[in-house]
Image (cartoon, rainbow, N blue to C red; front, side, top):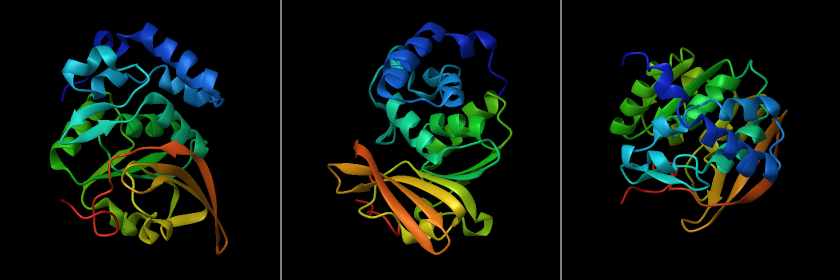
Length: 223
């Protein structure tokens, strides 16, 4: 994909600023670098054309293939929970639209992202390549396995929900690593933050949430 024009990238700038102020800052997101990134990353490029006018609203949106792009606050809350400082190697399970991938690529050294649906992975890669991201590695596979040959990771984000966070992913956290993921039944989940220190893994509940199911060997079976 050719590099996207500045006009395309910077359109909706006013809506992005309003999104950051009303949906993120007013709800307690305090990481200034994260807020700056989300005021800049063009979320409208990652939505379906028919939903671009709603891209900066306080809601998830469909992206095709029965998948969604999370509402901006959830993207910010999950990213903030990882506490990225810029030098991390991050694993993302569920590339989806690629929007969350872009946000994390701005805040870390490298993002390894896995998507099981080929059409979504290809589209996300086209958009991210068009935005000149050079620190993202893509893979099409069952994300519940993680990416063992690239482990350990400083941070792991799971963008779909399983009954429990797959042990295979927890094992791929490095020392001091953080993992954020939704867990629970198919109707309602809790957003969970795990921190690894030595042989211990601590668990913290962040908020209620609802995500599409994590399909795979260590998640939900495909219907």
